[in-house]
Length: 103
Image (cartoon, rainbow, N blue to C red; front, side, top):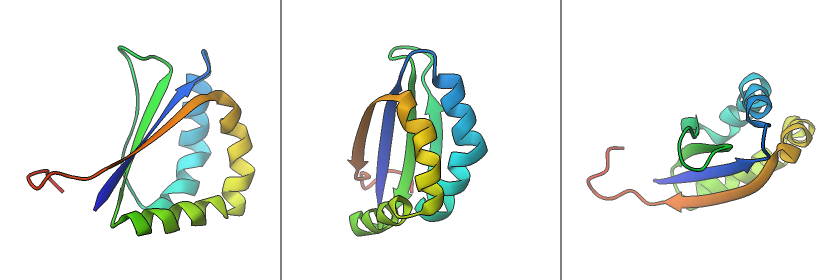
């Protein structure tokens, strides 16, 4: 099992629109393909204009297959141009759980 942590720094002033689009359209496209979303957050203190979302996958290969499936989706291709211009930076980390981490 791995967890993917995706964090996006948004262009100033675009957080409300990004969250609206993701909540009304994006998650309904991502969730059936990517599967187990652990959370979707925005920051209040520290780095502002930032969103973080966490996804659980069975393995690195499972993640690769699911991300490729999302990229090939016509629904994603139609949706992505709405949100990508709102994003200033994208960061991605794959996390391996410690043996004592809750699953």
